[in-house]
Image 1 (cartoon, one colour):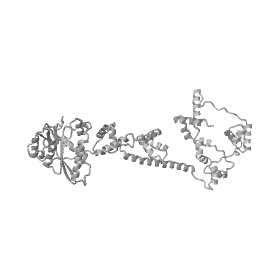
Image 2 (cartoon, helix red, strand yellow):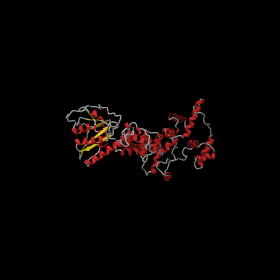
Image 3 (tube, helix red, strand yellow):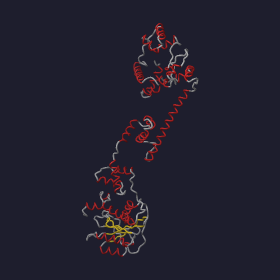
Image 4 (cartoon, one colour):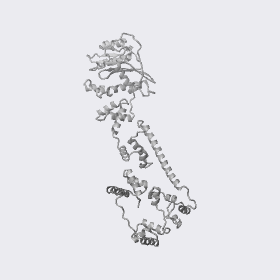
Length: 514
C-alpha cells in the first residue's frame, strides 16, 4: 500500500498536469493510470463528505499465533510467499514478508538485482545469510522515484543503498573488478546520447531550412508557417522518427498531417500552368500576365489575373522591361517646318485619319538597320513600313508610296512626324502634295509630341530586340526577323485597348477590311 504522503503527491501532480495520468505515471514511475484516476475520484468523494481520502480500507488484525503459523509454513514449504498465501488464505504477500523479517529476519529468501548478469550468472552469485531485506518500493520512496523507475535502472539505487552487498555479487560476476561510479557514468552516457541526437536533428533541420530559404527568399526564418514546418519534417522522415521531428520543429501532429496531405494532392492549376507556358513561348516572351490572361479568357479559361501573375512569377516567365537609353537625332533646322496639327491628340475616330511616322535604328554586330513605319492612330495598325541599311530619302519615300496606295479616293490623313530632314526633302514634299496629304510636325526637340510612335518603337525593341543576342545574325536575316515581327504585330498581337484583339482582327470586327 502507498502511504498518504505518496498519494497526496500523486494527486497534486495529477491536478498540476491538467489531469494527465500518463504524464504523472511516466514521471514518478508509479502507479498505473487506472490507479491514479481511482485515487482522484476517492479524493473528490472525500471532499464532499469531509473525509480527505474517502473510504478507508478495513484493517484486519491477526493474532501472534496466526503470524507464527504463516511464517513456519513459509519456511517449511520452499520459502515462497505467494504459495503460502494461497495455502493459508491469509495474509497478503507484503504483510507475510514483514512478518518473516520480524520473526525470522535472516531466513527469508533474498532476490538479487539482475544488473549486468544473465540467469546462469545470477545462480552463481552468492549472498550472505545476513543480507537485509531490500524493498524496491522503500527505495523509491526514499529517493523520490517509482518502483518501475528503480527496476529500469537495474539496481542502481540498491547498489547505492547497500554497496557491500552489491560488491559481493559484482565480485563474482565481474571477476574481482568492481565498477566505480556506475550510476554517474550511466546517467552521463544517456545524457550525452540524447544531446548528440538532438544536435544531429537540429543540424539536419537547419540544412533543409537553408534550402527552402534559397528557393523562397520571402520566407521569414523567425516566423515559419506550418506549411514550411511540415516540409522540413517530410524531408527528414526517412532519418528520424515523427515524434522527434514534431518536438524539434514545434508543430502539432494534426497540423503536420493536414499540410502533408495537402502537399500530396495534385496541383490545382497544373493544366493552366502548361497552357500559360505555351502562350508565353508562342508570343516569343513578349506578353505579360494581363495579355496572357486575356488569351486564356478568349479560350474559355476563366481565371483571375492574380493567379496568372503568381504562376508566371513562380515559373520565372518574365517580360523584360524597357531599356533606358537616351537618343536624339536632331541636327538643326534646314527648312521651314509645318505646324503641329496633332498637338498630342492621338485619338482618331476612323482609319487613315491620323498617321504617325519616324525612323528608328537597330545596331547589331553585323551592322545597323533602320526602320521607317507609318502608325495609324485609330488602332495602332502599321499601315506600311520600310527596312534598310541607310536612313536616306529612299527609305521614307518608299514607305510613303506604299501607304498612299492603300488610301481610298476620299481619304486625306494628317501625316505627323518630327523635324527630321527626311520629311523636308523635295521628294517627300512632292509626294505629300500630289496625294493631298496634310503635313504636321512636332516642336523642336520635343519627343512627347510624337509619343504614340515612340511608344511603338519602345514596345518593338522590348519584345523583339533587347535582351537577345544577335551575334552571328546577318543583316538580311535580321531584316527578315523584323519584317515577321511587324506582320505578327498587326495580325496577332492583342491590345487591351482593343478588347483583347489585334489591330487586324479589330478592323475585321468593325467591317473595315475583308
